[in-house]
Amino acid sequence: MKQFLRSDHCGYLSSKDIGKIVKLNGWVHSVRDHGGVIFIDLRDISGICQIVFNPTIESECHDIAESFKPEFVIAIEGEVHARTKDMINPKIATGEIEIMVHKVKLLNPSITPPFLITEDQNVSEEVRLKYRYLDLRRPQMQSNLIMRHKITHSVRNFLESQDFFEIETPMLNKSTPEGARDFLVPSRIQRGKFYALPQSPQIFKQILMVSGFERYYQVVRCFRDEDLRADRQPEFTQIDIEMSFITKDVIISLMEKMFKHVLKDCYNIDIHTPIKKLSYDEAMSKYGTDRPDLRFDLEICEITNIVKNSDFKVFQSVFENGGKVCAINAKKGEKLSRKDIDDLTSYVGQFGAKGLAWMRVKEGKLESNIVKFFSESIQNEIIKSLDAHNGDLILFVADTVEVVLESMSNLRLKLAEMLSLIEKDKLSFTWVTDFPLFTYNKEAKRYDSVHHPFTSPNLDQIGLLDSDPLKVLSESYDLVLNGVELGGGSIRMHNRDLQSKIFRLLNIDENEAEEKFGFLLSALKFGAPPHGGIAFGLDRLVMLLQKASSIRDVIAFPKTQKGICLMSGAPSHVEEDQLLELSIKVDEQK
Image (tube, rainbow, N blue to C red; front, side, top):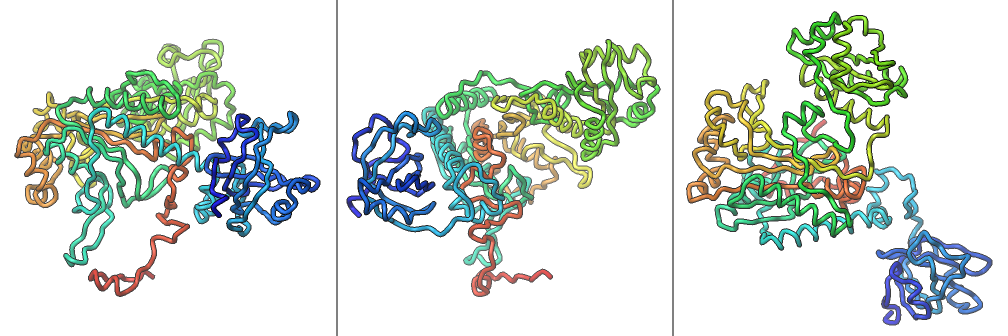
């Protein structure tokens, strides 16, 4: 085997190597027999090159190659030749050359794979995940994981250039409420007690700030036992960052520099900084969501006060019941048919909207079956407020605030898709800031944290904590890319008394606070510095930059939406003896 040790990689050869004797190892990508001469595309992690078995040059090698099939693993030795002009393949990097083989060895055969290792195969995700080791041979999947490595490496290089320390935090911790269910790990030694896998390193990174490290980061695995979807996994990776003696603006500025560095380093893309900022209220009022996609316009416009005095009873009723009326101007929406509008009406119905009113703009006036209920002055105000012109289509939703915002935010995205307004290659970042500190949980009749219970309130509004907590804003910030939340963070509370006060407002009494967060509260008594941080979802970031449709395409071995690994069969039953050691009894569900 020694003579077959690789000297070069397939995808790195070029016309500069013509005349060179090379040794290559890889997989048979495809086989073509052209009148006795066998052409094979040989593939390794670097790419593909064409190797040639000519019986008039080396008949023994040719005879061996006749048995080769896709995914056989082989080693060859041969000379780099230039292809004739009419045989050059511009679609691959090695298209100007081929390897004339004079030695070959079969390293391992392969049974027929369930799908071809090419990009254009329409294979179900279930099959891809079951045979993930084959799916990962596909060039796009390899590109995704290689770019994930490069992005992670670039992040590390930047943060280390800014004097950050990478410090690991425990995987086995105590269960604390952080917004989702914990994955629990039973302790064999401490019977009846459980560790929890971390939903995030939140408390530990704050402890590191108290410990004086000042700048911490970690590329860390996190775990949440929650319902899954395309951008969720039970285990995911986070770029976790915390700093002492800083402000919100310092953190935002440094993170903008980090993303500017990463995108230039990994994709040679320049992004404009400073990144646009929206307040939470502005994002909700203009786009109906706190993670707006700003690759296109289509802003939402509230017109409740304009139409409340119309004769249209639907709008009147909504106004009288404390709801709102909002509209979107679908510029050049004249191309949308009545069927399209009917389909859009059904679409917003999924989000609770009871209907979708519409008006077209023709010759400077509004036309629809409901225009008669609106005076000329009201119509003119609608046209002015929505900057409507001939050919535009105005769509209205009237309902409770929650229904209107969710319906309009999704309608906005649907219209952008139908009208081809989204620039697929555009990267549109925005910061969303000034979130409320609390939301009110009507079912539980208590306040909940909008982010988490360690988020600092705006210090200028602390007086409102006693009189009107829902008016208090937080020192928090989210970074959004193309309508997806990449991550978020906040300034933390470094004062123990303020942290205890927030716990009380969240209905966490002293005993519960001590039980769940006692070690943090204790640490805050020992000169804790002002500090804050942020965490980004690495999986989501790579998904967006690689233009993948799901984070499962940028994770080597993901789970399905039911939390199953189709390749390994996890989760699985365990032996009864293992359960007895842990004092666990499983009740079989019927």
